[in-house]
Each structure stands twice: as structure tokens, then as C-alpha cells.
Image 1: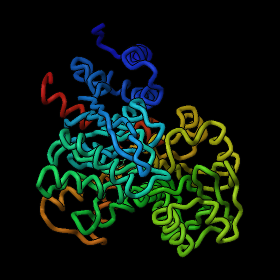
Image 2 (image 1 turned 60 degrees about the vertical axis):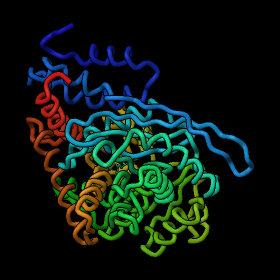
Image 3 (image 1 turned 135 degrees about the vertical axis):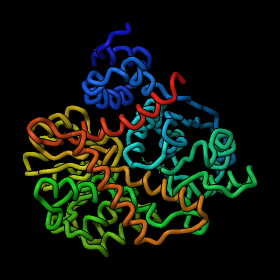
Length: 449
Ligand code: GLU
């Protein structure tokens, strides 16, 4: 049991036993374990302290009932969660997701990933994730407000500006954060930076909304440059049309790339010549304000709409996976390669299946994993916390500059830990080992806690 070498299969067997029926959590851990176990075996201090076993066990899992009343006066019951994963290098930090199919499995995978991502940002941020199986789609603003107030009435006991600072994720945007912050402030009678992604009028940060998408493109650009390419002039597909996808598309267009396809859960548009900045602004308004469907965009600008189709089937040089987990599988990866795709960047969390990642690495498709590529969102959340503590606001230029510096530093960490003997860079390995080392070393310093 206490061997001086870790074995991947044995480790995963134990993890499956301790966490049955949690395939997404297994997948997220497997991806990390594959790259860190060889590293751990060269550094026995981590084996002796059983760091990987400890890192894969959340500090705590909080689950609670959320009751609220809909517009017809019916009582609704949902489940709320906060998975506080690891606070070794800073207070718990990570988003809240509202989605009808949300389970503890998904939140454990997201919280685990967040540990490494937050470590890579170079900022003092621990890791957590939370949310609810409440589906905000189709609900009125008043219903969303009542749900958020009820959710925060319980969650407020477990969070705090130095304890745990939630933010948005799928289904949680400016509207939901505002309702939750309003309720938190009312209950605590204190104005604190306890959530990030807040409105600009009440302690939010410029560039936070754009940060995940912008950061993903900055990272992709660094990766391309490292390999003698550039983003300018490249044909790109972007999956999704939520917060990450919209601002990924904006930065691609700004840097001279062509966005030829985007999607939502109903299908994709295809515009082979690329969409313009003005068309994108129309799409942002459609998605953020009018809460419409991507087919309306296709109709408005006369481009093809492909019902129930993902963007991976359209020819591109660069692919940005910005919708949700496991949206790009082996079949999609083969299609991308056959159509000449040279690089994939993950803007969403774990959008690529393990088989697809391995296939692309084998075929030398550049691959930017989520932990590194999408860390810009939480990095600017960290900057929102700094601004709140200092009670001042930085300018757009200052924040974008800082975001760019952080994305470059993350890329640098991937090079340091991801270069193999032939000089090739494995970004998955680089991100996993760099993210692991900082948290593991902090855990070692604390002794057995
Ligand atoms: N939900 C985002 C993520 O996956 C942002 C988290 C945050 O800003 O705390 O990293």
C-alpha cells in the first residue's frame, strides 16, 4: 500500500472505488495523473506525503436544498452545491454553474481542474466550484432573482472575501451575480468583494467579462508564435456563443483572424469569408441581452445555418473549443485534421475527450489545454479581488496588459515543464506539472493537514 513508486492504473482504480459513477471526475483526474505520476516518481517527497491522493480529495463538499416560488406560485425545489477543493495557495476561488443536468460529478471535475488552473495564473488563488441544477433558460428575471436570493441565503454561510470567492460559469452571468451579491450584502451588512464578475457600478472589474476569451486567444497566439506561425489571416471555428466564445471571437477578429463558424445547442452558422466586428457586436447583443438563438444570426446576415451540427465539420486552420465539456471527440478530431486544422485551443473546461487529445498529440496538432488556455478569466477575477481590496479601479489598458503578461507567463510555464527530450512541447504535461508543483509544495510545507 505504501510503495515508493506510484502506479497509474492502481491509483486510478483506487480513485474509481472512492468515487463511483463519476466519469467526468475520473476523466479529469486521469488526464492529470498520466502526466504528473512520472514526475512524482522522480520526486519521492510527494509520494511519501501522498500528495496526489490528498489533491484528488476535495477539502469539503457542501450540498443544500434551494426552495423558491415560480411566477405561477408553484414551489420549486433545486439542489445547490459548493465543492471547496483546495485552499493551499489562496482562498477558494471558482465559478458557479447553473444547468439542469448539473451533478456533483461535474462539479468535482471542475473544482479539481480549477486547482491547477488557478495555480498556473501565478496569483494566490485556491480552488472551488459550485452551482445548481436550476436552469435559468426560459425563466423570467423575477424567477431568476428569487432563485438566486434563496441560493445565496444558504451559500453565504460558507463563503467570504478571505474564505471562498465564487464567480460565474455556464448559466451564471452579470444578472445572476448581481442578484446574489445583492442578497449577500443584505445578509452580511457589509460591502465586500465576495463575488467576482460584479457589475462595474458596484466593484466589478473592466475586462473581466472578456477575460476568458481574450486570454484563450493570447495563449493560442503564444503557442503559434513558438512554432513559427501567427494567428493573423487564419481561418478559425469557435464552438459555442456564450461568454467565452463571444470574446474569443472578438479577439480573433481584432488580431486579423477569420471567424467562419460559431454554434449554440441548436446548431451552427457557417460564413466561409468570416464574420465582421459589427456582425459580432450584433451577435453579442442577441446572446447577452435578447437571449436569442444562433439561427437568428444566420437569418439576419444570410449565412448558412446547420441544425444540430457542431462547428468541427467546417474547414479551418484553428479550432477554439469554447462551449462545454466533451464537445470535441475522436471523430471530430479526425475531421479537423483531415480538413487541415493545425491547432486546437480549449476555452471551455475539458471540452476535448481524452481519446481526441491523444490523437491530436500523435498527429502533431498543437493543443492548448483548458487549464492553461482559459485561465485568463479567473486571473482577471484575481485582479478584481485586488482592486476591491485596494478600493480602486484599473483601466482597460492596464487590465488587458496584465492579462497578456499572465497568459505569457502561463505559456512559459508550459515550456519549462512540457518540453520532451526531442525539444517537442507537450502543453498538457507542461500545464499539469507546473500547476501541480506549486500546490504540492505548499501542501508539503503545511505538514499533515
Ligand atoms: N468559471 C471560470 C473558470 O472556469 C471563472 C472562475 C472565476 O473567475 O472564479 O475558470
